[in-house]
Length: 110
Image 1 (tube, rainbow, N blue to C red):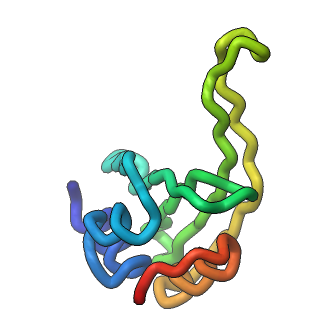
Image 2 (cartoon, one colour; image 1 turned 120 degrees about the vertical axis):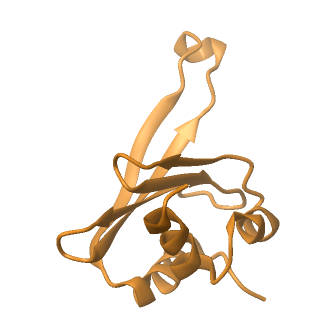
């Protein structure tokens, strides 16, 4: 895991992905060093259940995308459905936590 991805999680959680699991029920965290992204799932939200954080090195800003991903089922030929719900572009590092909490209604700290 590179420094950029560690910094993204730190800005969002003021901790590592262990806290993400504890606070949101996250079971999967996927890192992409090539694209400078972190994607994780979360529970207890009707609007979305996945979040992708991307870092734009040139601008030193972040993008946050929320997705609703459904599990494969017999009714849709055993294929999952991926729906982009909301995208927040050009966020400063100190905005990540507030945007996540405001959009989802979930808390990232006690």
